Image 1: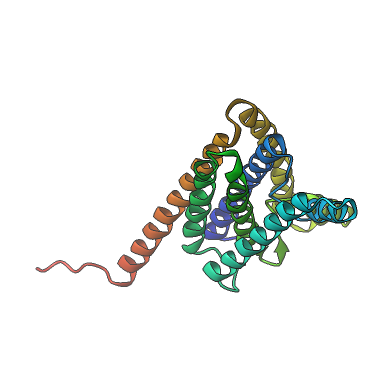
Image 2 (image 1 turned 60 degrees about the horizontal axis):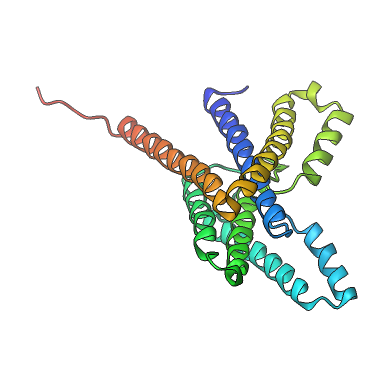
Length: 237
């Protein structure tokens, strides 16, 4: 039986995953448009790195290797912040989102000169690795918000095994929503990069900051409410 708390939690997960998928799509489009380098996923970067090795393009290989390492370090950061129990939602998710906002907001600030763009890539890839690690697992379901290959696979498997008939409709909604918002974020990111180059990254940074700040306040209110229920105020006669 689904409790009101479970329903609110599921609603938050869907909203948060949708926003984060849009953020990842936006960030990736900005870097693909501006620098022709993906930062939100690893598969394409590894394939391109293999091509650079074959072609002897050491500069391109260095940039891609830097992105891969930064993404990995961001994922380590997610594990350090959230611990092993990523199937539950706690206050540190808000802190993680604020850290991601800081990384994305700092990226255009360090790239004021052309030779400093690798630093922007490091910050953005680290932010994407951190983001992808936030919801790496929720109640037994793998969640991905920075790349969509696995998401599309999971949605196809869910439909193929008719999971929607077993009370898992919300999982299908979650997966489909992240696909749509990732694509929408990619479109917005391409427009943003054309108009403002890397400065467009302040838009997803603001989205992460707002979502993270809101969640920290929400969890704080929950904590205060629980404390009041546990220790009710006694009025003197």
